[in-house]
Image 1 (cartoon, rainbow, N blue to C red):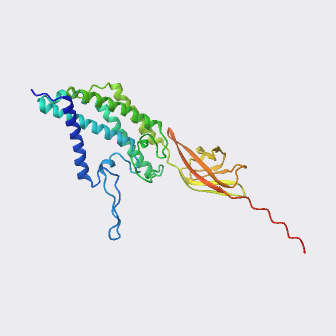
Image 2 (tube, helix red, strand yellow; image 1 turned 135 degrees about the vertical axis):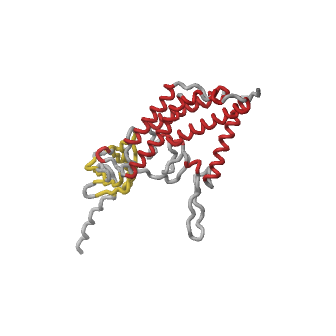
Image 3 (cartoon, helix red, strand yellow; image 1 turned 90 degrees about the vertical axis):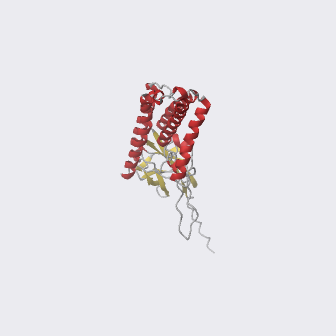
Amino acid sequence: MHHLATLPADLIGAAFTVLILLVFGMLAGDDPWKLGRAGPPHDGVARRAKDAPIRAMVMGTDGRLSTSKVTAFSWTIAIVYALSTMCAVVIVENRPFGDMMDQLADSYLLLLGGPFAALVLAKGITVTRINNGSLAKPKATNPSISIKDLASNDAGQTDLVDFQFLMFNAIALAYVLLRFSLHPHDGLPDLPTAFAGLTSVSALTYTANKAVAGATPAITSAAFDPATRQVTVRGLSLGAAQAQVRFDDHAVELVRSSATEVVFVAPPDAGAGSHSIRVEVPSGTGHHVVETTVVLPAPPAPPAPPAPAA
């Protein structure tokens, strides 16, 4: 009986996984690894951005990395690598394939079910809320790959639930890959059900957080009324009574507030010039923050004294 050493088996599995991604990227789009950029206009007609199928699987429609997509994609690649490696071992050593698949039917179904359920449910919740107007998903100004997006909300603030979901799955994934790569002939490593359950619980919490998260706020204008010294900030999803507003890093009391407008009185010591405004809106287990500036005019100059009579 031929024996396939550990390192060659791992290399065969890794190479086959990369080959699958390359073939898919080549067949599914003409820009498999990049974000996709529109080419220069041709005969006055703008060209469509190139397809980027690999990155499309891990990025949301807003141009940011999607936590649920990246997690599900990572587990998919890990299982493809493991199955490819086991196939190489079975073919070379002429072993029964079923002997290496015992673990896949138990805790791994629970392990894989959590991230994929979170992906499907989170996408459904997000699409539904966008369609009914209860959620806004602003697109990234310059789409790029940023690891920060995996543990952040749409406003860029770190979200505890996203971080927990990401970390539990990262630890489980690292454990599986390390144990398997060291002993590929033993098949997928045994994974305690309680360990796999953590990923499912975090997936449930992640999905629930998507359902209760508030819409991403946006500021469209900020104006100052010299007569009343009131500052009016207008925008979308500003949090109404839940909004917390700071003027030059000092908390201010709201005169009135709604989802599209917050009004407060500028502090009496605020002089002429540009001043910062920060609006913080609670959102699920986190919060969204938007900032802008407003310019206070200089007080009118006192009237000049009348000229003395000649």
